[in-house]
Length: 211
Image 1 (tube, rainbow, N blue to C red):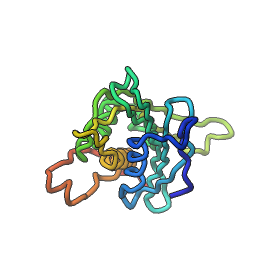
Image 2: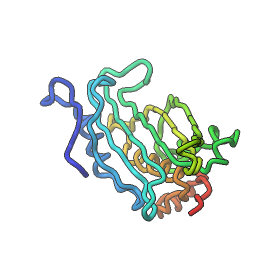
Image 3: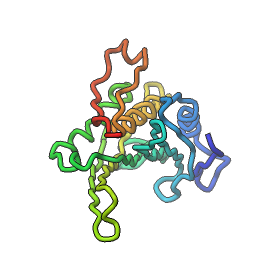
Image 4: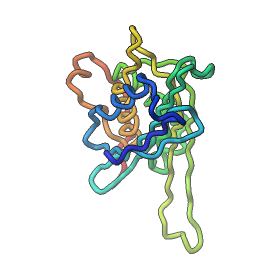
């Protein structure tokens, strides 16, 4: 990964143990080979402590999907979160233009997030978000360009802490998020042997794009 960019509030020497533990869990997590991931500058105004990752899905020379995942932490919690941690994401992907008009696309896209987290047993509560789609049609001097479309999934959720004050299992949340990006890119769910043994799955990707 790249150099560390973590917003640690005003007292960097007094970073809460739970937050340091959560960041290390994200750094140590193994991700799918199609995913290129790196640390980026974390936002400074959303919470006292924050950590951010960006990821790109690569299939050959193509990069059909990308996204950002931000971990927020307030030691005293936030009422809207119902917890001390919150995960926030933006996932974006190319679409076949004819798919942008599918009336079921928003519901299916949201199910990629919830299904991917469930497949990795990433326990959470209080999810919220939006699914947006946009189509571009080119005219005049740009008429030689092919029509294109994109989908954006903006979401946040509170990872459920494990018993005994151990904090949430954020490696599972990162794995689920990576599967979300791959579903947006039209790739099948991860073939993790442990996940298959549990019988998890059911995340349906977009149809593969035309070459």
